[in-house]
Amino acid sequence: MICSRLAVKLPQIICKLHPMISAMTLILGVALTMVVLHKTRAPLLLGLTALLLSLLGCTSTNYGDDQFQLRMATHGKDIMWMPTKVETTHEMLTLAGVRSTDILYDLGSGDGVIPIEAAKLYGVRAYGIEYNPNLVALSIRNAQRAKVHNLVNFKQGDIFVEDFSQATVLTLFLGESLNTRLMPTILKMKPGTRVVSNTFRMESWIADREIKTRPGETIYLWIVPANIDGLWVMSGLPKGDTANLVIRQKKQLFDGSIDTSMMSHARRTIYFEDGRITGQHIEFAFKDSQNSYIFKGQMSAGQLTGILNNDPKLPVIANRPRR
Image 1 (cartoon, rainbow, N blue to C red):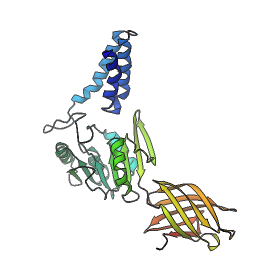
Image 2 (cartoon, rainbow, N blue to C red):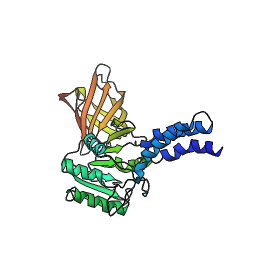
Image 3 (tube, one colour):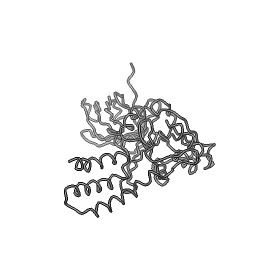
Image 4 (cartoon, helix red, strand yellow):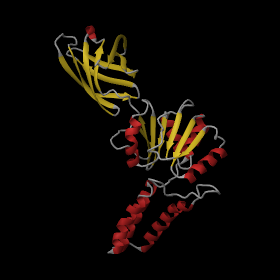
């Protein structure tokens, strides 16, 4: 009975270490269970065990240097350290559309690979926040070896305390629970900030884009949306109508209503759905009794400005009501 319980629990325990080994540990768990129940032969188990141990052998690899021995699953404040592949780093930076004018922050920066690669590839200013002082020191040495120490900076600190509000690109490899804890802070960042996460989602915040880079690995991109929730007064609608625009925002998505006389001079409320915010850019569609319209515009200096149906002759402006 004890062996049976171990066979079931072992994959669960090991899988918590890292998603990359989930499939292999599952196979081992199934094989071990079958052996315990006398439904297969020991050679199968031995072969699978050898394969798994070969995979787990990477935990003995030194990812550090002669001054600090860094092992996979090294414990940190909230999570265990796992290496980020250089090719994955490049894919994250590509998805974020990094430019030389960006300011990149990597939260839980570990050995510093993401800031260092960003500096090497794009000449960008990059910062890493890492709780483990040994990893901070290792990152600094790695930056010196890569000859980008003039572009990168690593700081020992708590990602829930340190200020990273100046970032235009934010990179994460933390875990879904930590991503979700950071979400309220991230949503207060400057609209248009690009957030990229290796492997892990952010609970209720749907990614703007996601790319499966290889089996078992997905990269997620979010773009911090402007806050447009609430009441606006629109002007410039057909026939010079003015309307109350009510927006109900959920992250980068929104729906709402337009209260206006529109084309018919009889007040009515028009409801719309599937509005989208991409940074400061806003788009939504609505219909009156006669026509369909698409508003495309942006949020700037507390004002919504745009045009209807891609026609510069149909400009629309919306402001917050005066109190």
